[in-house]
Length: 485
Ligand SMILES: Cc1ncc(COP(=O)(O)O)c(C=O)c1O
Image (cartoon, rainbow, N blue to C red; front, side, top):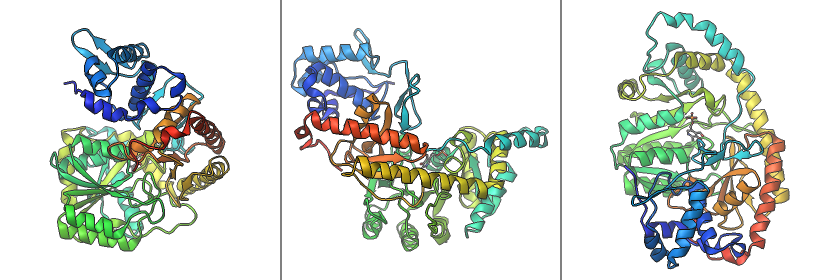
């Protein structure tokens, strides 16, 4: 079934399309086509939706139908629109692009593109030896059918031990191995949230978590994070829980994506107690918990304050080790794990045995691998911060003491426009609105420090160049933004 966007809806999404950078140089139809491409690039206009008929959009935008006709023609020519006479026009991406894990589009053939849309490291050198060792282990499993819905016991033991070492006693039957943390979240939501259920999330938050919630048609309320540490406002967060009594809250207390904030122990304790009092289940995403920087001491795990099985913790290998491994997990009560495993059988049965064995070998080597990752991330973060201070001193950032991203407050509501302009000079950015709802957060930009320092410095140079070009395109255009977070 194709969904459709109405003229008035698209007009609202397009906002001040006629005032986008470079506008003075291009005719109306080209500006309109460019704005639609921008919405597609930001993921704000989905792929495969039917655009309004030309007349309807012309009326909604109060422009001539000829302009819309010309814009649609250009979009067809650039491969962003498919049309069939009598049936309408659908959004698409050109054949040379793919949709990246972030939902952003990536030209396949552009090797010069510096991709700051994805916040993940390349694989560590230990990965290949771990894969070879895993292959050696495989014969131990070949005598069985290979389906282990909660995961192979060796990996569940290793993951459970890691929690116990962090001060959260955990047995292997409290662990279910998944195909990445995102899969863990999706499974937990299937089980814990009826379609249309009420959910509280941080704003900004991880875009693919928002996508998973959207798939459950969740009704989302947000808790806005401050740029400054600690980010969460205790009164507002606890008050929000008490007022909206959500079925579920999705939180990233350990080096939050994208802000990098770390929730203090006292607030963790109060959040768990309040959630229990109002009947809210907490899903705690610990994707970045292994990556404290600057000697930062971690507060106790959020689940360590839980006495009533209110907290389900999800985590995985992607950030400290490698995203391509696709290994994550859920930590919950043993009965909850059994229910998740039963739900999973209807989805994907089990995780690949070989990949789980690779994970076992990597976890056995975790202290050395993770120490090297932290050193690498610290150096890259510092290079990024220095480049930003030199080239874009008007931007405000908090220095993240862990994780892989920093969250910058820009000198205007320009994030999407900047991302579009940066794409032209070979830098892919994930603009602020991707981390929130309803097109807010235009003043913000997430910058990961997962690429080599030289790439980060080069990227900041290119971003700075196009940022000042936006000014030359007419700064007054941005004085009255359509939406500001
Ligand atoms: C907060 C958060 N949760 C989940 C994920 C997805 O992780 P995985 O690759 O393990 O599915 C990410 C990856 O960026 C993330 O940042």
